[in-house]
Length: 181
Image 1 (cartoon, rainbow, N blue to C red):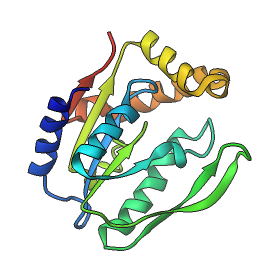
Image 2 (cartoon, rainbow, N blue to C red; image 1 turned 90 degrees about the horizontal axis):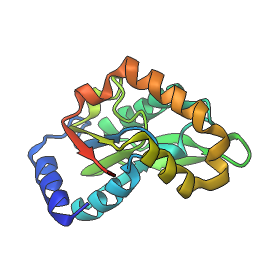
Image 3 (spheres, rainbow, N blue to C red; image 1 turned 30 degrees about the vertical axis):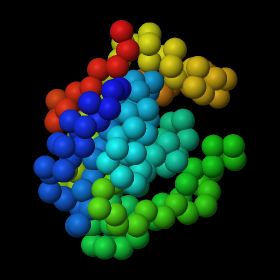
């Protein structure tokens, strides 16, 4: 994504008022491999934002629907000026790991599938949906995470499909970003 696009997104973010206490929260949601993390990396640098990667919180390969309530507890704490905490998921041990601490910040970007869930929207100032063709997404995801993701692609993709059908995340997005051909 060009810096011009980051400039437009940064300007849009700056127009928004905080909805999570004094923290402006931007969710970047969309299916796996769509380019969320790449977008978030550049956007966070351009805007000077803190980032919460939901992949640190998903409780395993079957845990997509369990993640929004975890994030809601973190944001509820941040909204009243407290440090939000959640157990970081230990992917190797397949169990909860060390605590992750999320302090209030002027700008926080949520990066990951489920970050635009209905239960989180009251805390969001902006919801960005990122999408790419299915074949491009799968190629990116498997290139990025190799043999770790490959056995779970279908399981995770089915959860995403169900989640997005119920949540209608794309329909609620303020901005849609297309990546890939």
